[in-house]
Image 1 (cartoon, rainbow, N blue to C red):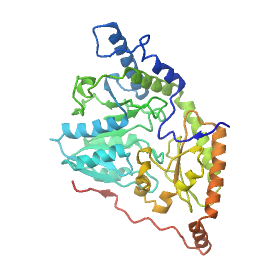
Image 2: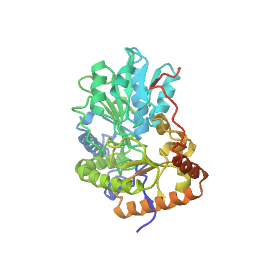
Image 3: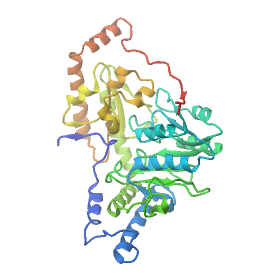
Image 4: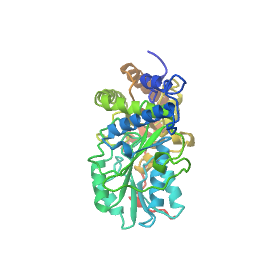
Length: 416
């Protein structure tokens, strides 16, 4: 079997060879390389057509109007534009923003900044399975709530939130809804003709496209959503996102979404079977715990805690297998996952958590090799672990050696 093994698709994906070939055709003189805003010559007009074709391809996956797709540099910029753009443009309506403690840092850090600049932010706790009950969202909505920002699929646990129920609630209450769909677009069906979502962030590099390109869906009907731009310049993208459009990246993102629209069903079924195969094998170990909802989860993410060892020690013992301890954006902090802690997971279990994320090019051989290597590593490390010995002795005496999670409030409003 070819080594090393890549199982960190939630962090980024390898570019599909079909998409890589397309990228190259939009870079050189013999391809379509022009500035899409240069309408006075054929090179610019060709590039503009490529951009609009890609816009249609992205919109097609979501069943949206192509005019509702705004190009960005990625989901992080799309999140920033959605949250700050709405709260600035809608300041007269209110200053209250609702989100959850399990959001990606690209949302949480924006909310923190907004909270320091005049907004009031409510952070919702999830249930232990990672989901947020609809009634908890309803309780937190206020007359001055302008926007709710809740992700579709959690990037660490793979937990799926019920967009249909959440969007129906926010629409009924007159609250705008932003959804971070970086981990769900192309993996779960999203129909924006039936889902009353107002803003939705997208990324190409989570879907076998290139890094550095994403998009924000901004609803135009029945009411056009007003945003204040982050960048000012040449007035591109209806004045919402200035800057010369990267034709090659946009064409590649369009192709990534086109491929996903055609292959999503079969591909996700294959990935699901591989994920289940991995989990069934790992679950044979003693004291292995699944983090997240047992059923409402995306096909490609599996988050598992191995009691008695740390995830860092397991990863160090598996240098030829690429997995992670959580979000790639926070992996350098060496802190327990904020997602797992919000779910009430104690620090020992959080530090023992490993995220396996599968994708388009994952094979059965890689899954079987990984399962065997992980089991061997965990067993080796447990033999050396005083903590594991204490846990076993606690189990034999009928007592738990794992500290209980602290009691937590479901809603918190940090001071601004």
